[in-house]
Length: 233
Image (cartoon, rainbow, N blue to C red; front, side, top):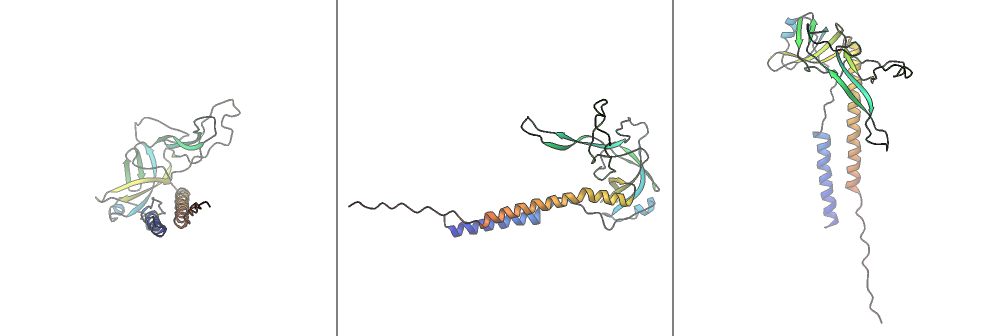
């Protein structure tokens, strides 16, 4: 194949892939909503337009008569732990895994009334973090204690919380996130989760772009000179 045509075809392919990489592949990295409503009554909430984000101040309570299930004093929780996922003795591959996640139906109480949030209808990505214990995990190998990573999160009964939601297309308010009760803490927690995602995605795109450009502009391998057979005397 003609070397000039091969290079031109390679540049076209790389250009198409880079366009898809930077223009079409846009994983969700959510900034903190800039224009967010803070209604304090049910009437103010009902007057919000469709698609408007809102933030409510209130507290979380378990449903009366619901089966009791708690971990570290939280009735809503995500238990995360670092575990060795290596298959054999060749090395150690430690990963952060979710051991258990409990998002039951609960009551959301605020100045505008009381809502019942269905189970698993909200996320705990930005919920208050549960700090690991200071003492050794096995208490000097005498008593077993729970082990968890600092990214574990959850809520106690009656704990203040912020509920982030949006007005649905049918005009109904829908809560999707539960955050710490203090605004400053909630914003900090949001940025702690979302900012690493942004930098990780950017790093992946830059590495892929550099690899594609190196491949596009690499020089083709030179062909070895043809052997010439000289006639004998």
